[in-house]
Length: 299
Length: 299
Image: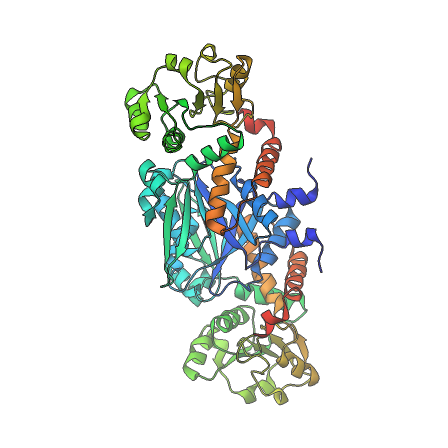
């Protein structure tokens, strides 16, 4: 018998099931690290790779997923809407959001493969909050941003029984469209509304390392205090400028890595039928972030 | 710094270049084992996976190769002819054989990807013979079979200066078509011609473990003697019934693993621009064969 190192280096083999993520750019994605750790932990003979698919080629990528018999496909920028338009069927979250972050292949009795588009961002967000002991039911929530992540969060918050979901965004039209996803509890908000909120969620990319807005905050921290729970979906750096400022104001802060891990854990369960090893996935994500050269973070 | 085990289990990452093989069935392919060992040996951040692509879907697989930006694609049964019809350009061997075993992506200045179809089976066969000290120039050769492997071998032998290339096959028409690939030195042969041959190549699948003809020989071994070099392209089992019988007749025998390794080594060079670590690839192939449960070999 070869030792564990030889076994590891000898994989993948011809039997290994392939899954992956499409996006552009994709090189800095933590998903391969997170999923490969989970497969190893569960003893599954799967491998997860990153495909740098250029914008406009989501349809060809889905055809490739079918031909290559991929066991699962994660979808990230800029393909979430195009994939929603290209799969055979959409789960309710993906349909409502017009965005897919996870494609699940279903083998039909005919041998054909049907591709189901799902969106695990919202449920992943809720799972991360639950893990941190944050109660959404009855909460007044201010969501900063109206892009894809914000929309998933707004819808999830309403589904989990938030009392109010206020969407703050520079463009009122986009804010209204996002707020509509919360149904009767959703509306467009103003910064001053943050004062009476229980939960504040940064769903913009402001503060993300390596972007023009890295080092900035999405909201005047003077509006925050000890009565607030502040969540930043940005996870790089782990301690964002916004979370640092919120903590200085006495708020309870929650980082964004939990949502990343939990949306992946839900995809893992859909694809494999196996309960995801969440702790292993989180440890892998943290190790992956820690292993990055600082040039990756700061450019 | 994580240790080597953690580093191995943390791969592939988002930066890892993906290559692979398409075929059906593909589970028993040794190619992932051979290529992954080579990438590791050369310190290349590549991974090689097997895609179980059903017959009739080679075109979709090529579209997938383009969309997924694969760094290389190996092609095996039943897709070699369909891929030859689907790539953007064919190298001379692939064009003459109407069969591709290796697709090389060329990035154009426009950002588009052009797919070049190559066939490294013939050159791989010659490299394996050269490694074993077998001289083709001036040799009289009898090739058993007229399928894809036989055709590649016949063309390669003629190109390397064989004096005669006789093709033996049950169907005379297919034998003639294969012999034509050798140009003026090619013709259809009969078993009795083996008596005057220097080199005898089994390019049928007779003797392959796990097939109906496993355990059988493709030619009456009574025709063989100490003046013959006998090559069997079947590599599983390593010692085929034909090679056993030939050895008993006093022939010099050469197994088929060398051709498998060398055709892969040539593809490796085309894709990566790096000299292939042939010894590592052969050791990985041998370890991969040895690691197979006997049920894999015998069913």
